[in-house]
Image 1: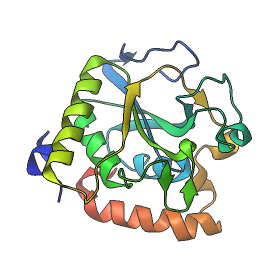
Image 2 (image 1 turned 90 degrees about the vertical axis):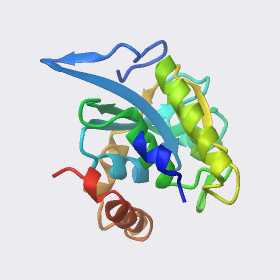
Image 3 (image 1 turned 90 degrees about the horizontal axis):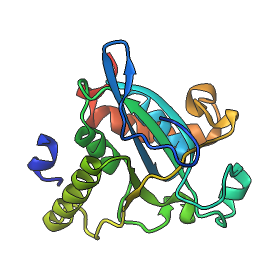
Length: 204
């Protein structure tokens, strides 16, 4: 069980730093980048979270600029499949997004989520500012100390360097392909569990 304390609590290319919040009229938006397995699954979950303004699937964490899906899937680029989330911190906190992140995948399996195996499927938080780094590391340590999972959390917490948007057919994948076998057998069960656990966080 995750401890009670845990609950209390710009999309660009190389060189882009999202620590500076974007101004949208009177709303200040912030950015976070998560990797937790196949980005089709993660995108579908965070698209349904109140306070999230956009979710973009892409690649981050490697050295190769502008990688393709095939290149990332080979495991040779060092990139992970990630989503970059733009959110309104007045509606949902970074810590609340972390809660959803850690509870909607298995953060104890190294370079693997279910049948998806490889470094491109690693559990990773790419922090955009010092506050995100400190919060992610503190909560990870707390969760490990609490024994929330039987095995230690292996989630990588590393500085954001660059984000490369994935090909168009990966964007909004579940919503556009609900009848695909992968969506029915993998994504739908994840969404059902997520919507049950986080019903108070869903877009109204």
